[in-house]
Length: 444
Ligand SMILES: Cc1cc2nc3c(=O)[nH]c(=O)nc-3n(C[C@H](O)[C@H](O)[C@H](O)COP(=O)(O)O)c2cc1C
Image 1 (cartoon, rainbow, N blue to C red):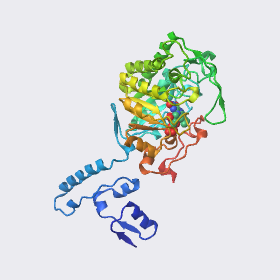
Image 2 (image 1 turned 60 degrees about the horizontal axis):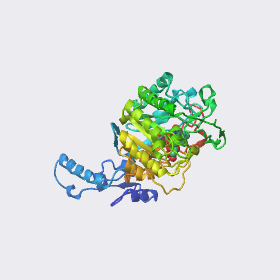
Image 3 (image 1 turned 30 degrees about the vertical axis):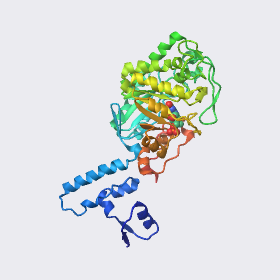
Image 4 (image 1 turned 180 degrees about the vertical axis):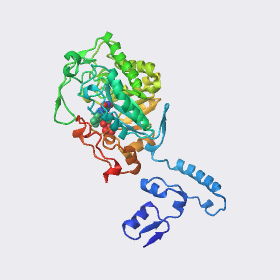
């Protein structure tokens, strides 16, 4: 048996073992200053510096402990811990880390009613003090455009959400519901009495390739909402938010992204209205801001977030000046004092593909006074960077979190990640591609 000692750190200790120059590596000063040295090496976490001055003093332990603590404080400020795993206070919510579950449509809520199998799905992705955003959830019977997406406009749906939310809470998670209206991204089969979907416009949407890259989605030409009907839709959002609170959610995220109804009002490629909801930027954003205001008044601004994707052109919903749109919204939202603004990175032109892109969310991050969330193509490294450089307060993970229920733990350990399987994103099975992605402990 060969033991080696003398000036070893994590890297050359590993090397000594790997090259079979030693069976064991002996650590002195590092172990002295880091009682949890094996764990730190495992995580590749920063190690505290030893303090030469207290090596040989005869003080009792308590004195030593104090000096160690001072040393720890110094170290903590010199070497910030893993940024994504640092705590963050979002309004009244004490988050233990900054890795957020993205809203992810799963199409397993049969007949628009959340199902018991969602308990396991969300539970798998819950950590104590972690923040989760539930999938897009319809606000009314005209809000759907896909099979089996959940709703929150009936008593039955509210009751069905309760055990799911309760379980997330039992595990210490903070849980918001993303509330949604698809607008023209629908067809008559999803609409009451086979009527036309509603929108800001009557411009039809061309058939689109579905996410599986094979099927084609077809849309019924929409009916342009009359000005006097708009307050009713705002009211649907308000009631849905109230229902979400009734179901136990901690708050709601208004889905203002990805070419759905609210985006159809905001973006000038879609909105061709001539009333006070069309034309100028201010007019196009009016609908979104009326919804924000109504919901903030209903459930409290400290429970309200909004998701926006000013740069995306998904579902033929692009804007000729996305920077101005993003900035106008960020500034306007400040008036309502809402909890957070969640923006999708400019590099995500569609929901799933990343493009090279010169644009940045930084001006919006600087303009918005509440918590700023970013999403879109983040991995461990650039998520950490976004936090370290103060480009965001929280980073939202979609596909990686879907495929890795224990994503925060994997990031902490810098462990390998499961690959997501696109083909099972939207299948309606209660298990496959949903709750069957393995945890780290069961992977090896
Ligand atoms: C299967 C799937 C479902 C999605 N459903 C929603 C949704 O319900 N609401 C939403 O705002 N975005 C939705 N998105 C977009 C994600 O929230 C996220 O912004 C996108 O996947 C990019 O982030 P990522 O690179 O971390 O996956 C979905 C994406 C995927 C892959």
